[in-house]
Length: 297
Image 1: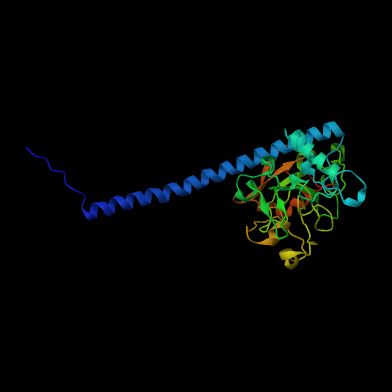
Image 2: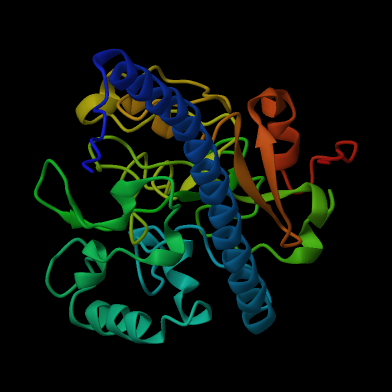
């Protein structure tokens, strides 16, 4: 006896293709939601690491690191960021020793070599939701740079110096009179689309303030005056959803996560703030503004 297998008819094949397509249409958004949730949680973990490092720095030095050191201050490590100063507390002692050695050879940190750290991506400063920060990038002027997803909170803007990380800052926890649990220390903000702003190592832009490179205010202003940023409005810029290819998004906090961005508080806690919190962000950004404490939960 011979058994024959009936082949799929065209109608049956089309039905199968339709079912598979429907299942994929349901599965892909679910996978994207899971990935977005994982990215958000991973970014929160990175911010907690930074919080621990900043607390350890405060324990050792008696104050938080300077957000930025201008070249005319006479201090060691001109142009250096607060992020770089946390490296010894992030198990990055070899990189910190390389930075110290490079400064001994050449105090101008934009020379490569000896400042190889300028182009070094550091995982602790990267949000997984932004693939660009995971690799070394090249700017208009040929600099090889490593980028950061996080900006220290300098207060209302780069000139007010009423936050906890700003030009030549040495803020103590006792200076945070608004409460450590209701004062912002670090927030998410992706680098600019041309990689000219958003470096983790050093900064030479926006009036030598460190903003908006690795520092930022809740209502930041623009004084860059170079490249595409010359055409950005002067501000102030508010907490809102940014765009990857829009240069002016560099001047306000935002993230690749839906609905808001993660922020590290001075007490070390991390919260996802929605963009609807833009009106209260200035109050959260100051260390001693005397505002009524805000419940972030």
